[in-house]
Image 1 (spheres, rainbow, N blue to C red):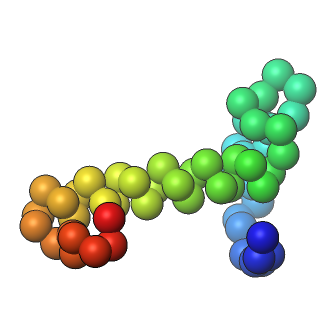
Image 2: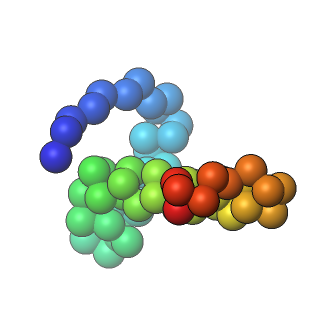
Length: 59
């Protein structure tokens, strides 16, 4: 799996960390970020589909 790096504001990182670990929704930061990216891309696909902007081959 390729690795990436990103700069994240402290406030966003603190909010992310509140959802990670014992009692959190995610095991680690990577899982939380992957889930967020997947959800965001799905939402963008839904918006594009409503506006007729999806290429049939990309689905």
